Image (cartoon, rainbow, N blue to C red; front, side, top):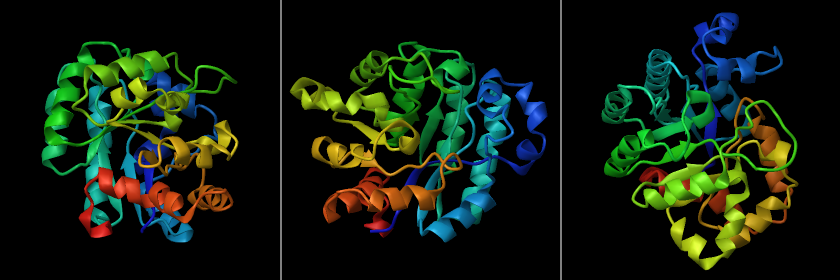
Length: 281
């Protein structure tokens, strides 16, 4: 089974070259990328990383800007990148659901063949997960039968730039409110998947998947075999590249005590099924 990285960020070269200009245009971007050490990558750099690391495909998206104009520019770059590497990149759209015109932009991107919506950044974009502004885009994505990737984080532990105030409870309520929409909770859902040991929670979250992005900075690697026991068909390999290199992440996974079947499901099998990629099955 080919390897699919479900969570990678790409930026237009202009944004990378003029980082300081964009730091002034978006407060959440400034929070995450003000440090020169905070890496940004173009689609070309992502493809080079994939080639070096043995990753076959990647789900890629731009930054979830508050400004809808910047979201559209990010989407244009993703569309262009997907057209250049249609066998390697699967694009997601970014919109700000709290701003007028989000539904129209999302429709445009779905019609052009993007595979999902995300990564949504509720706090950075100015809304909460229980905000009614999310309802229209959730219903749209249910119609298109494509997933919505949402930033989540653990409610305890150390602070880091980008750790938001969104709660696991608010994500849970969003999932309950929109059972027809497939959701992907980034960063292991902030630990939400542990609660799937409760039968009623497992039922309520039957349409929720969890990506592993940034896991190496957050959890011991014991989380991989533990997740394989609880959510074997719903865990998705994801690096948060360029935050973490794909090669480094893959090496850590290969050193864990995962069965061959669990490793195959994590690294690509679950993603291929979720994204309906028949050529990879």
